Image 1: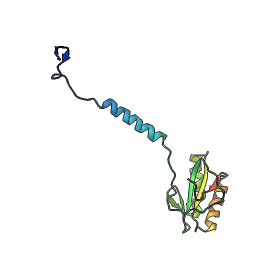
Image 2: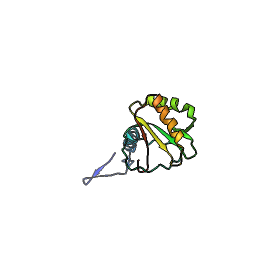
Image 3: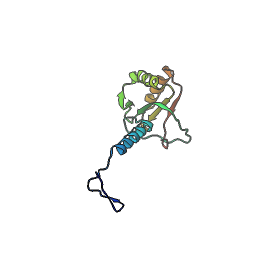
Image 4: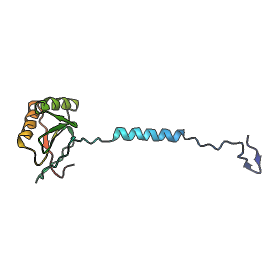
Length: 138
């Protein structure tokens, strides 16, 4: 018990510990808030050198990101996909987020027939919002 002497309390018997529990609660709540509200960047799974373009238009919603590297490999959702399985993979990912579209990142050295195969697969599953990513897009 603190004893009052001359208008002051003696701090000898009083606990001087700092309670960190409320501060930790606030930190964890802020951490959860930032994790939930963070925007997640989609990565293709392979390095792509995109071609330049004279015109470009930003697409705000992307549900499926397909990458075609210089060797002609097709990557979807950080996994290499065979040409025959591209349509099924695009359809599965598009049903998870039907409001988004398809973005194709094709390397400058990629062969056109791989790009055409991805475009045909997107058309076969009914995807109409298709864009090709170029240099300068984010």
